Image (cartoon, rainbow, N blue to C red; front, top):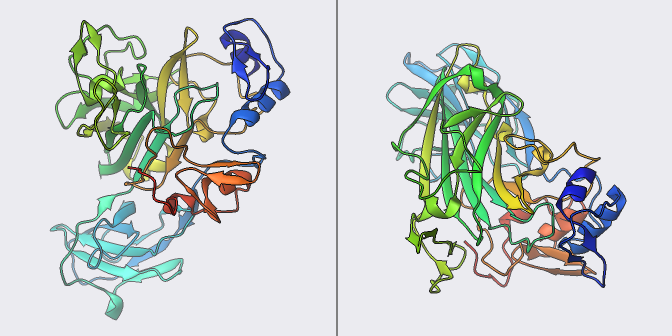
Length: 424
């Protein structure tokens, strides 16, 4: 981190808040940098042990005792699909009648009501509630298998990015918003679906996904179900992601899905006077000429065809590493979630973690497919000098309180501000 500061930019303390200078040669200690970030971050008194993780581990033993001899798989669900729409598949394993599976998986830290289901080759579901058990049998009188079935969808996370790393930003966390899911098509094919939902920036931003548990050499090839890349026919030369391949090798040899060179072009491919048009897309609910527009989201589904050494069913959405790429002070900088904050996927721009110096994230993963990110000008949540404000600021359920204490307000993402600001 110390080297990032030295290369990037000095910061001059005039009065609070701190102001950025154009000097690129002032070197600061880790403690000085930490003080600057914490003086500008929306939350003061950050929990020094925070991991900014909204997930927890779960494991089940599932026994299938169904008379149906065509059972193909078992799914763990966060609801009953015979009652509710939008039920998500949290984990899935191939399984036949009479077999036992023991999946481990991630669930939100606000534990959903879990169900398990055996699914046959025609898509018929046999559903049983888990009821806080760790050993569940699908069979007997508890099985639910009639009524109107609402087809479950695969677990989807929303990723929010701030573009200014490592400098303080406006922290509305809407500069790029991605919604990502994945599932095994079969043992050797992993489908990763990515939706670009919003771009709240005025500068060019690239994006990619590193798959830390898959080496590039483990991937035969990749196809895009929609037939084209996010930024097909990009108007200018590529720089952030120079590799023409959809999947390339990261600096550590892991597979990296190259999403797009330019978020604006990917949402709305438009030029004006030879330049890509850069409005803020989908971060206001109304259009402002030459400033903001509401446009359809764009989705791409990447099918990774894997070698036999990797089983797609055992790959977890929680393990992926989506990141954006921005140009800050003449360098290409990657912005990752806190878990991977100092990882380098495609660009070399730091020499290590420096002890997780500033202790705060510029990117967040929310375990919610429809999470309402803030509109322009509203922070995700503030808690400074005893005052709580922002899009998620309901007392005892606020982003700010969670930032101060990782064991408090762990459900903040479920509670928009009681005043209902305009959020997506």
